[in-house]
Every structure is written in structure tokens, then in C-alpha cells.
Amino acid sequence: MNRRPLRIPESRFPLTCQWEITCRCNLRCVMCYTDCYNTPAKIREELSTAEIFGILDALAAAGCLEITFTGGEPLARPDFFQIYERAKQLGFLVAIFTNATLMTPEAAGRLAQLPPLRVEISLHGITAETFEAVTQGKGSFERCRRAIELLLEHRIPLVLKTTALTLNRDEIFAIKKFVNGLQGASYRLGERLRLALDGGDPGAAYALAEEELTRLENEDPEICEAACEEKAEEGLPCTTGAYSFHIDAYGGLQLCSGNRTQTYDLRKGSFKEGFYQSLPMFPCRFKARPVPSISGEY
Image (tube, rainbow, N blue to C red; front, side, top):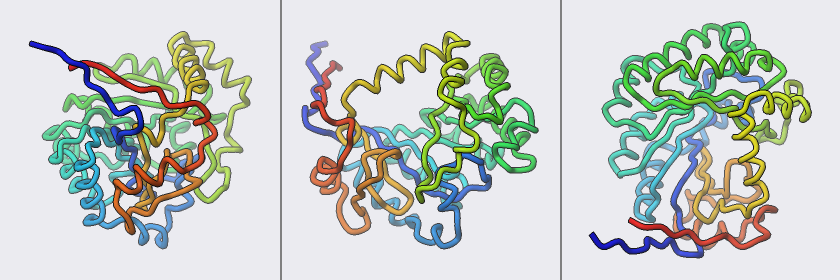
């Protein structure tokens, strides 16, 4: 069979989307940056099912390939499976970020019928005491552990991740050891703490000092390697807005979940206009150098 280069335009192309479909959540994790919007008033402002369907159709028409549904807690939306199944029917590769405590046998079965690319679960402790000190949800540890078992039984690819905090620093390696013993799951130390959507800093009281976090990373070869790769990527030009983008719970199109300094309102305009005309104008201090072109073969 003849093979020829598959070229992505050197300018921009919407390959992958992270979509924060809700800020509602059944837990109140101490460091959560979306929890400040987990209020009845803000929930009423979130996109409706019909609005989400319309944006999904627009993303498919624009050629987007992969969507990650996150929150808040995505499964806290009563219409989550309508949204998920619509995305799968449109041909997207779909990942889900979840706390897993709302996962039921029925929900796991529905995922197995239309398997996701992966499910990423926050596992912030190996004991109920530590886990629930982070989540502030009584019984959440057992619900999360049961969900992990359910999803593995259905052969759903899992990534279990932990945000390193003063509350769980003594359990990080025990969590990793537990995950390494699971067939079908992988582990990573999660993202750094960030400011809340309203500008607050809920994680400040629980943040590890940079020196302590570095020491922790250096104690484990795999965690150290991942941290080094992440730090190396910090020196590269940022490609958000070129091949990836973020949509918030209210229809705001942004460069990424960590850069919401400017927003294009998808309720008022088209996705193609927002992606091709507005996003390139949004400020990002990591875009000083040109975005490299990407090529490959098929």
C-alpha cells in the first residue's frame, strides 16, 4: 500500500478539546478550583443539553477528534450519559475525568457498551481518613474504591492520579504501589494546585513547599521521570489554541483550563469563528515562539 504524508496545517487545527461540562460536584475537595462555582445560581447558568449537543455537532463538523469531559464532577449532570453517548455516536475519542463516587454498576455497564478512551480518577489517599480529609465527603473513599473495581471488571482503561498535598504526602507512594498492583490501571502524580475560578486560593493551606515536592518526586524514578518531562515541556512553545482548546460549563471557548483571561461565547457565535478568528488573538505568555508544524504518515 502506498503511504503518503498526513500533514496538519502549519497554522492551526482543532484536534482535541477539554470540556468542563459542569462545576457541580457531590464532593468539596479542599483544593478544588471549580468548587466556588458549585452553587445553585451558577449551575442554572450552565449549558443545557440541547446547547451541548449543538456544540458537539459543530466540533465534529470542524474535524475535532478527541474530547475530555471534566468538571466539577461530570456524572453530577443528570444528562451526562446523553452527552457522552452523543459524543461517541459522532465518532469522538472520549476521556472522562471523575472522582468516581457517583459510578454505579449501571453506569459502568453503559460505559462498557461504548468504551471511553480512558477514565481518569482522583485517588487522593490510600486510607479513608486521608481520602476523606481531602474530599470532605463521608463514605467517598469506599465509593471510589468500588468504582475502580467496577470499571476494571468492565475493562475500562484507568488512570489514577493524586494531587500531592500536606494531607496525603505520607501516602503518595502507597497509593502508587496500590495502583501498580491493578491490571488495567496506571498512575500519575496529578497537576499542580491552581487558583480558583473566582480568583481565590483554596489550596494554599494544603500546598507542599516546592522543595518538598521536588524531594518527593526525586524519591521515585517513575514520578521523577514524569516530572522532568513536564518541566522540559515548559520550555517549549505552547500549542494550546493551535491544536487543543478548552470549553467551560457556560459555553466559553478558551485557550486552556489554566488560561481563561479571555473567552469567546459559543452561545453567541460559531465554533469555527471562535477557534480560527478569536483564539489566535488571546494572550498567552508561553506563545512567544512559533508553533512547530506537525506531520506524519498513515
